[in-house]
Length: 108
Length: 113
Image (cartoon, rainbow over all chains, first blue to last red; front, side):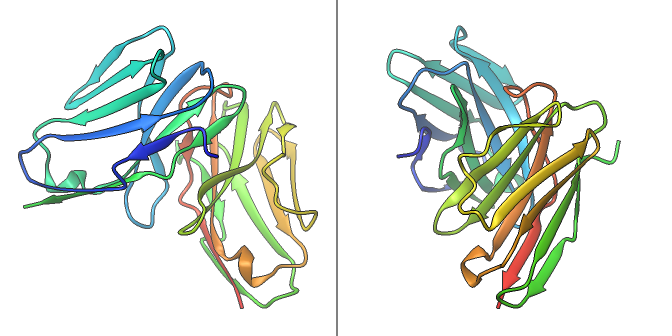
């Protein structure tokens, strides 16, 4: 099965609300990365968190990593319609694996 | 920098034909990745290169698929013969080091009839 798996599969929120997406993985990792994909386009890197880090911020993004639970979360605060996209976690361990993604819809 | 460049952007071909997808990574990046994305299977890593050498090709689905990287600025993914189930969007990505941030190209949308 896949290394990284996001949940929920789909999330719909109102503009201004916070969006939280989770990622679980199975084996040890060197780092975990989050990417965004707008419809019909390539993925764009958002943030990388290393295995010895617990939390990282970038603008309205906050990522946490719990290696004991083999899980990560991505929080987008004060969401905007432009945040509508699919979000993927990718784990770097022995290999490099993307999860199936969370489809986020931010309604104006 | 123009970013990762892929060509063609769209390809429609008939079953049995050979298909060649091309990628130019970002200058200075030493790792290159080929991915395939479908609704059913999501984003799958097919193969990646480090310093022009294939490191892991375990994701290549069949012998019909082959990839080369003759130099640091060019890679190809070839499907011969193509089949309808190969229809997907194929992405190329590059990075500085295999575990770091990857920069994706715009993808090639392949349709095999």
